[in-house]
Length: 340
Image 1 (cartoon, rainbow, N blue to C red):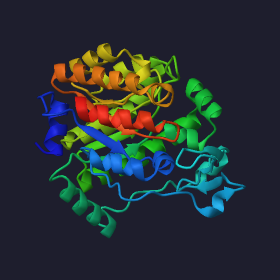
Image 2 (cartoon, rainbow, N blue to C red; image 1 turned 90 degrees about the vertical axis):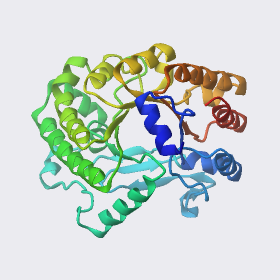
Image 3 (cartoon, rainbow, N blue to C red; image 1 turned 30 degrees about the horizontal axis):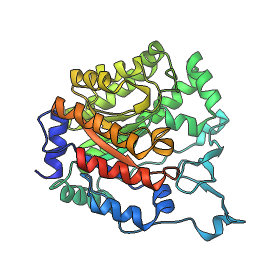
Image 4 (cartoon, rainbow, N blue to C red; image 1 turned 180 degrees about the vertical axis):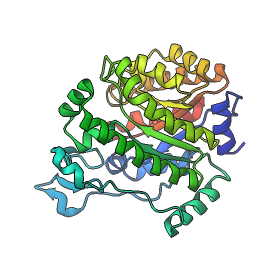
């Protein structure tokens, strides 16, 4: 059973030979742990097409007095300051902090479908699909608003349903639709959405307001993906509560949630009821940086026991950042290989 079939069987709950595992090449973890992390990843290869052959570090010009400090501007015109290499920075300038800028603001677009870039990516995905289920993303209808405008303003404007924010959200949704069509054209099997909808203990938005503002926009995109015979995977950190019920009702195929915000078994059973596959991502907030190797192995064993019992529905996800001790990193990867 190759990686592609293993992943498909996990989504279908048809008993893959092993629980799939995917690795994310976080530059923060690779920079801290170095060659030994590359060697560990290569010793236990994942079920996603990722290359672990090199380690990237900060540009020497960004090291000031021995401390990393870098200011970047992305294609959206968002300016961020980064103080830990490989970790998301703090926004210094929101390009639409003043709505007056919206009239002339141009959102970046994906390459045209008849472009050399699109043809090259389509050929590459066709090659990868022989062995792998190919994910592409991410699309964002909330996260990007918090980059374009200050968070406090966005939250107030969602509460008041400010017409200016609704127009901006419509433009953003249309932009994401174009990006989605590009991914579908290139042959992606799974399209990833990356909007965080939870604080630690509560959702960011009420179910009623989510249902009124966001659900129709998501549904249009989800419908197109499903009509194309592809899958929708949704990433959302924090406590989702009823927002997850909304997403499940909309027919998402996968969820990448924050593990320490849910009861593991109850959440697994709920996903099984809706035919949703979950990323099994051991708690990176407390367990990985502060737990013991034995606690990490126990958490992995719990996941494995539950999802073996269910016959699918789980995909181990490994992302190592800068704060996880090496003994915990090693315990995680080795335990997944042992129990999966």
